[in-house]
Image 1 (cartoon, rainbow, N blue to C red):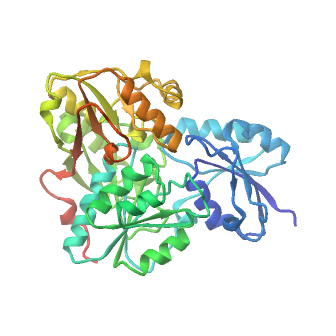
Image 2 (cartoon, rainbow, N blue to C red):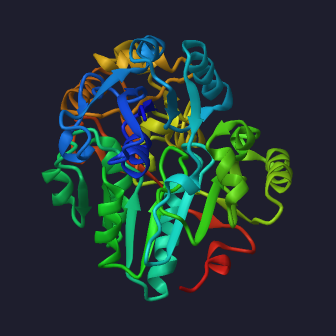
Image 3 (tube, rainbow, N blue to C red):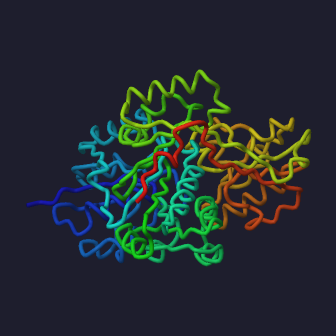
Length: 435
C-alpha cells in the first residue's frame, strides 16, 4: 500500500507534538513537510532526525506556510493537518480552502487523538484566548495544590525555538537553568513566575519523555497551557479562563471553542475592569456552550512596584508579547496601570528597531505600547535598542519576567504585577479536587 502523504501546518509546538504522537514511526503515513507561521526563525530548518524516528533519517523540512498550495501539488500531498492555535474559525477555514483547492484533505486532530495518558493526576489550566489570565490562574492552582501537601510539577506548553535535539526534555528549577538554556523572553515569561514560587517547570519537544520524567518527581502534574491550545496530557480536571473583554471569542476561535465545551471549571477573569454587561453576556454564552461547567468570577488586580515613577508622567509601556500580538489585544496590564495613574504614553512605534518594526506591520491593531518580543538574541537586542530610543520619563514593565535581568534599561523603571483574586463563591479552591 502507498503511504498517505501529509503536511503538518504549525508554529513550532502543537505540530511537533502531533507528529510525535500520531505520525512518528507510523508506516501508514509519510510526513513530507511542516509549514510554519507566527514564530520567526523557524522556516528553513528541519525537524531533526534524532527526534523524527526511524522513518526520517534526514529529518523533515520546515517550509513557510505561504508555500502550502505549491507544496501540496508538488509533493502530491493527500492530507493537510492543521496544528496551531489562537486563531479564528475564519482563519482555520481559509487554510482548509487552500488545502482543498490544491487537492488535499484537511484534518483537525482532536484532544482524544493526541493526548497522552499520565500515571499521576493531571490538572490542566487553559484559556479561550491568549491574554485572558491563564498564567495567574495556573499560579493560583499551583499554590492550592502545594497547600494540600502535593508535590507539583508544572508542564508548560512548548516553545522550542532553539536547538530542538537539546530541547527534547527541559527541566527548570532555577533562574540559572533558564540562563544555561538560553531561554527566550517568551519562555522566561512563563517559567520564571513558577520557579520564583518554588515549582519545577518542564517543557521541550517530546512530551512523552517529558511526562515520564515529570511523573517521577510529582504527585500531581499541572499542565500550563499556552496559546489557548488544548492539553497534551489527558486532564483529570480542566480549568478554562475566559475573557469578558473579548465576548464571542469563546465560540469563534480555535481551539478555545473546544476547551469551553470540555471544561469542568470556567474562570471569568477581569470582572473588575470589563463591566457588568459584558460579564453577563459572557456568562450566558458559556452556559449555552457548556451548562455543566462551574463558573468562578475573578479579577486580576494590578500593582506597581514604584507608582510614583508613573503618576502624571510620560511612560513607555512594555506589554506581554503574545497577549498584544496574536492575542489581538491593543494593550495589556501595563497600559491599564498607567492610565489609572494619569500617565501619558510615549509611542514606541516610530522608534521600533529591526524586526520590531515588522511586528507593528503584522499587528496593526497595536496601540502605543511595546510588545516584549524576544525570540532570540538578535530580537532581544532590537528590543533593548527600541527601549533606549523612546523618549520618556519612565518605563513600565508589564511582563511576567523582569526584563531588567536581560536588558540594561537606563531609564527609571517599575514592574506591574497581577495575581488571580476570586470574587465570591465558588472559588477555584472550592472546586479543585483533593488528589
